[in-house]
Length: 403
Ligand SMILES: Cc1cc2nc3c(=O)[nH]c(=O)nc-3n(C[C@H](O)[C@H](O)[C@H](O)COP(=O)(O)OP(=O)(O)OC[C@H]3O[C@@H](n4cnc5c(N)ncnc54)[C@H](O)[C@@H]3O)c2cc1C
Image 1 (cartoon, rainbow, N blue to C red):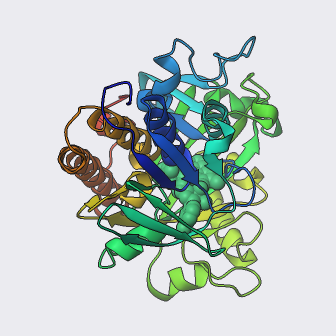
Image 2: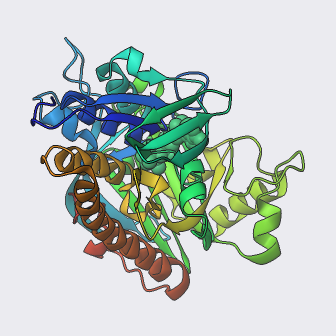
């Protein structure tokens, strides 16, 4: 029996990133027999761009009285806090400033903290899920290496390009939003001290013509959050369409990369164009940041929203269910929220199908609301050019600003 008195389920989770791990830990803790199957051959590594820590992203740790990273004996906090949100104009002058509270950490910190909690024999690397089939009893999951596993419930936490979603919901499309995020990080210590000062305790935004850029501190090498030893991260949203977009996503070796262009692979001519525009239109602080970055990279922005999250005994969570545009900074929090809600619904004592139906209703509602908000923000900033400095709608959040 589980802690809530219901029969333990055999649960397979496809994908062992933030969403899959959170769901696994919570469902394991209430007594279900959970196994995570991750396709990667080794423990995952973050993309180095940092993540915004919303309350839901670190709920597991705060509920146990151990703010992320603080729970381990003697460990310092591994998230940094910024308490201002500043907008600058092209001259670099602050045109709007508000007190806020945002925490940032490295993706690795959150991933490692979660991985430490799940018993090691429940996390299986090198398990690429290639198929799933509903049976009268549940689901049979098959792997690339030829094995298969039967389970009562398959949780698909396998990201925006989800294999499982491709099988159960093949009509769901992933649509390019018409703009990309140029991203990059530099060491805080590589900037002139006069330039770096604005980033000490603030998220910095500049609203541009049909574009916008933001920059903020994230943990530096060794996850350092000590001022001066942190990194600075910029995200510059730039419109790109048609053949221009197709060309942009061809790397310096001629390989087409439809979604992300890693550091070091962007063609020189596009980096030169970015730098030229930085010289022309950015505030001095942001300009220096972009010009100092040696290897900017590109993330194309997509919309993807499955219209159902539950297909028989298969549940889609996190990015596999709905991918949010980054403006709300809530992708990680939503993946965690899906896991928490699954735990709540699978612990009610209702039969599995009823529990899943209730879970789906609740999480579809949340996902549709926040996805619509993130799309609206993108449309306003990039196509209508109606984003204005100081607009409180721009605050990060899953349920509402800061939450
Ligand atoms: C390695 C990695 C690094 C990241 N770094 C950052 C970052 O620095 N900043 C940031 O904002 N976001 C980052 N993200 C994205 C972020 O984790 C997600 O956008 C968000 O947290 C939602 O998480 P998710 O678990 O739903 O999906 P994802 O994080 O996308 O995870 C999906 C997981 O499923 C695995 N997978 C995919 N297909 C299969 C399959 N067929 N079989 C088995 N496993 C499969 C993938 O390897 C991956 O581990 C990163 C994701 C990954 C995987």
